Amino acid sequence: MFRSRSAATVFKAAGAGFLTAILCSCTGASSSKNKIAQILLQYHRNGKFSGSALVGYGDAVVYEGAFGLADETWKIANTPATRFQIGSLTKQFTAALVLELAQKGRLNLDATLSVYLPEYRRDVADAVTIRQLLGHSAGVPDLVHRSDIMQIVKEPATPQEVISKYCSNALEFTPSTQFKYSNCGYLILGALYERVTGETYANGLRRLTARAGLTDTGISGPRAIVPRLATAYVVENGQQIKAPYIDWSVAFSSGAVYSTVRDLWRWRGELLAGRVLGEKATNEIFAIRPFGYSFGWHVGRTNQAKLRTFLASDYDAQPAPERANLLLASHSGDLPGFHSCMTLFLDHTWTVILLDNHDSKSLPSLATEIINALLTRSPDARSTSAP
Image 1: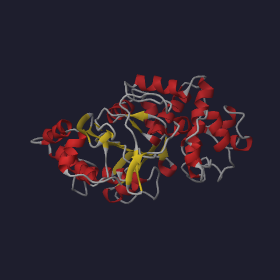
Image 2: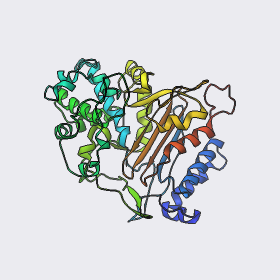
Image 3: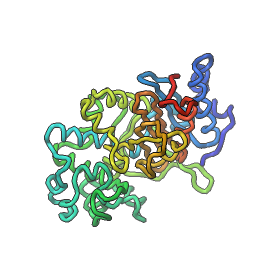
Image 4: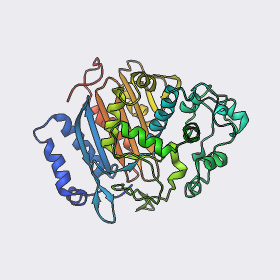
């Protein structure tokens, strides 16, 4: 993990004016803001968070702030407007695009893959449905477990090339009998989207995000100039260096989208209100399903004692505990240097969004600590208390 910094260094490097404003805005304000700010600052001082954070209650932002640097070379501070690669948070956008096609009658979620991608490996395409791909229950092997994955992601490739070369192996189990997270499943969904619509995934995403009022969310090639995009950093042999190069064409519809905490907050609001795809689609997206995975989200019930386990797994790693009074939708994203964690309380109370560009592996723990600090202390409480 990158080096810890003294408080004085934090103020200097992250932008004294900006960070001071964050902390000062807490003075005399609600205790919630103070709790959130102190937790984030402590994680930053310990080298466990460098990025942007937003916490909301209902439809109001309770806290937004940023720590550390978006660019270490030029000493440019992270802000709530900094763009980050969000990794697997991409999947919720891909799932929304596919669900929209189903709403319009352009595809059937329960049809097999062979209906839409007839050139795909036939024995697999005839056995796997679109819904199973969306829910990671298709049995399609995941390319990220390959020993040569870091070489694969350096080479540009079309969606068809990625699928034919790396996502066309035999199924690992009979569809719907197990859950196994598979980036290949969502890469296939991206290719399917392009085949059905005749447009690029990037253009489809652009239309979807524009309808939701998002202005800082998109997908681009690795050589594109993306304003305000943070640089990713990792630590090797005790030294902070830039993260390994990735050609985003390989991550594609599984993990190549960039966004900001503010855009993700806006997306959450539009999605829950049913203004993006309609109320029926919102209910479909946030339904509790076998294995706990629904349209790009981990949806389920838990309690404070098991909250860290819930947030660290993007599916039901274990059965819901007794007295599971928290109904959540969450997901994380992990790329070399970039990490993300987004958690929604489905009673429309708390939302916690964290984006990091210094390879923090601690975002589920950070989100858990923030949420636990905000929850009511009464064990009989339904979920949360207002700020």
